[in-house]
Amino acid sequence: MRKWESLSRRKKTPRLKDFDYSNHDYVYFVTVCAMHLLEPFQNQILAHKVIDSLIFIREAKRIRLYCYCLMPDHLHLALSPSFSSGSISDVLQEFKSYTTRLGWEQGIKGKLWQRSFFDHIARKEEDLAAICEYILANPVRRGLVEDPKEWPYSGMLDQLP
Image (cartoon, rainbow, N blue to C red; front, side, top):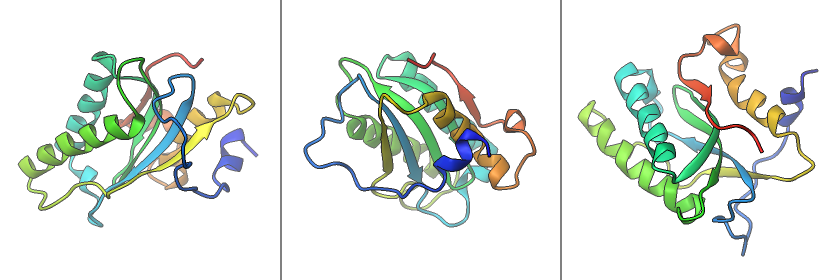
């Protein structure tokens, strides 16, 4: 069994009460689901614009983006906020709002993303490389490609801590 396969068995948990989601010392494994069941990111133009938006946020020093994988109906991220970016929730809300407007330009009606997101806060004892391997292997598990490197909507950008 590969390291990332054991991670898929974990239950998704709600956000931790009273946890500081602006703490840049943590890596957050986040899943954001699309609102529409029609797999909006099958639209290659929209998919590229969503990824460009992630990269823009990273280059604006709002986040450290260790890896990402945009699937046809959801987005996986491993990221940390920067010192001045606010909380992960704030950054994701801005990202979702902006990319929803991009979706409207591509004919999407209504909201693009579900209201909240799933998260897992990586702890020091966890293997962050295995978390990124899990994220990048999502298209393989879904049967979209045979090798994670074949998926055009994923990548690793910042070096893991």
